[in-house]
Image (cartoon, rainbow, N blue to C red; front, side, top):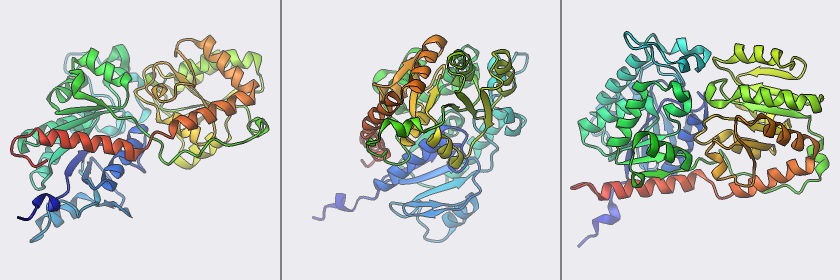
Length: 438
């Protein structure tokens, strides 16, 4: 009798997200790309649905198409329900979701203070983000009725209502991926509506993926999610990190004394703590220059703070940097400081090490779990942050050792490894579904 398992079709995943390169405002886009590509290379068919995506890209294992092209394909006689094996498609659904926006205030309520901390272009997200989230959910549900998949994998809260609606309509198992929670983004000003969406999605999901043990603990403590439902899937570098370089300390000493903050200018990322520590460093190392790279709602406030701290001649606000500019700045800087108030992971630390730049990490970050020998400080401990910044600036040997140690640890991280762990979780979920093929 023929063994039909030898001819079992590949696993099909409908993936929902709202950021993907080259449209990047934070780490979510890079993580989504790494995960999707890793799964496609592992033989999983990934159909990635985005709110908007205008580009068309062809690459090995990757196929990008707009929503109209997909619908034409789906309606064609004899068309397959999903892309050919080992291919990935990315689709655009016309909904104006943009990253890191805030919901409009609910009737008769005052918007939490966190609304003032989001990106300055929040007005471009549409008049009512809640309506856009629901619009995306309706369109995804309509799309989902025309395709076939084995399960849904949704990234972060704006895609969760769509995932919940489609999972209910099709009976597909749901996986949710938390790259950041509302408590990370807004602290005490967390919006109760977003918290409710995150809690419901995690409660109803068959599996919850968290980017760190730090995030896993938040989900357990804040949302009451069962520990055995949560699996930690660490992020990884975009490309394999080079082996530690056998360089003389002079090579690091030749770099300009640049200390870099790179991220959104928002409460969560702690740029104000960076400036307060920089003021301490500037008193002892007047040659140091502090680069604030990024944009967001706190920019004007931070510029005034820099003036108040006497940093006019020491700090430079570079604004949002594209990928090439990030590579250039990190390739020249002596140090990256990540003073986040609450950081589920922190991909920027991996980028810095890949560029040969040493890092100081907030103890309130997930990336420290994979970079244990690194310099670390509580975000609020400006004196300790300043001491560590001065040490790196004064001793190039220390800076180089931090880079080499960090790179050695990153050798164990890869998107392929993360994808294998996700694929294994998919198989476990499907095996537990009655009447569903494993």
